[in-house]
Amino acid sequence: MNLPASQGTLMFREAGQAADVVAEQFARNQAVVRALAADLRAAPPPFVATCARGSSDHAATYGKYLFETQLGAVTASVSPSVSSVYGVRQRLQGALYLAISQSGRSPDLLRSVEDARAAGARVVAMVNDEASPLAALGDAVLPLCAGPERSVAATKSYLATLAALLQLAAHWSRDAALLASLDALPDALRSAWSVDWSPLLDGLAGADHPAVRNLFVLGRGLGLGVAQEAALKFKETCGLHAEAFSSAEVRHGPMALVGPDFPLLCFTQPDATEAGTLALADEFRRRGARVWVASQRDDLADALPLPAAPHPACAPLLGVQAFYRAVEALARRRGHNPDVPPHLNKVTETL
Image 1 (tube, rainbow, N blue to C red):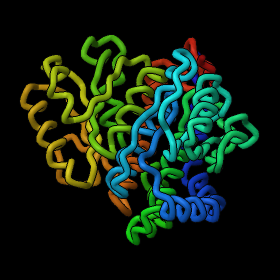
Image 2 (image 1 turned 180 degrees about the vertical axis):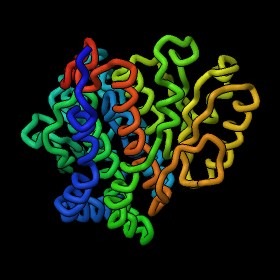
Image 3 (image 1 turned 180 degrees about the horizontal axis):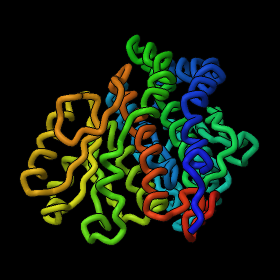
């Protein structure tokens, strides 16, 4: 198979643009985010609902923990099929309804948004295509500003979605430390893009060894959505069967599969969840599992380095930025073209 060089893949180039995308997005959206945040403080919603699929839904998982930890706002994921397949309108009066999509064109998402508006929700469209039907339905629109993304595997648009959620939470909460982190985030993303995760590549590159056909990706709290996104990217770009779990939930059954040589990638958070994730990693090492830990700490075994996050809520963005560079290289080493995964299209329209 004739594979492009790393710098020649769309995935590599697009993921490497994320820092500039985030900086542009923060500047462009500042006025609309401030106005939306002021409205939310003046009329607090009873809860937040998110509606998304794929990588966008993984971003919504980050949003859930972000809004719940920074604002105490209960946040739940709404299934598009409840509206599009079952035809049931949910009770969403006064809710903040975040519809997240790259294309803004999937019929099930659009039907869900129409029902949410009819039920009295306040719809915010977070979308990359500002000319999309989803943008037209939003009471407010937060453009992702990622620009064209041609690789099937979403990268910069996913990071742009995390950044948009972060900017909204910072202005809604008016937390000084969170607001200050926005200015520092683009440079931190640039640093994350340059870190060396070659131990992960070396450990997962063998295509024939049974132990590297399956792996777990662990995260917790703010980092769970990144674990979900990483597991998806392992599947679609590398042909690896990866499953994401909370480092708490993995103890409720899945850990029975973890034995000698079983691979695990752990994303740590520099917050109250870190100690539990590190303890779990140690437990798996004692079983003989192959463990890699993505962390800003430099005193850990099997560490994959990350730069210091300007705020704990920024850490997931740095982790996934470093991961994107590593997984693109891993895909090529395993003989895959990360730009064109088998059986997948860039825009998926579901009913």
